[in-house]
Length: 194
Image (cartoon, helix red, strand yellow):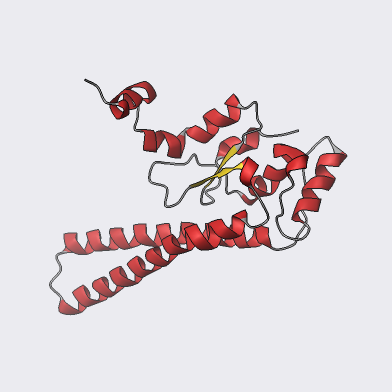
């Protein structure tokens, strides 16, 4: 008898975890006609699509957003991952130095250790970039908004003027814009306009 997980894997063509990490947000943006109610926050990556090996990803429920949501994401959820990534880099850097001083590493083993160190540094740097973007959103600033509507432009700057403070009455389009401009949403967020 097939399991639910097996049925989902067959229907999605990949594991549910991978589908959520990579495909969910794009599907959700289309499903909700470019006004998604669940937002996926990921490390900034330019225009790349998320991959299953994201160092961090969190889903935000639009209906539950408040002035403290991004602060909580930054300090309660992201910070432990960032601290762990920093410790991993430090430990691997010590391992590299110790192994080189001992002189008992083969060329192949040293390359593998260096590769692992580079991956860990990239993970740490991605997490730090996300932390920096979240901190920037929490500080007062203004944004240049591409919109046909002066109302949208004014309201986006109103919710960011004292640091990101969402206002549900202004809708998804206004409230998602600062996160979109920060580059912490998957590329499908660029479809959200108006």
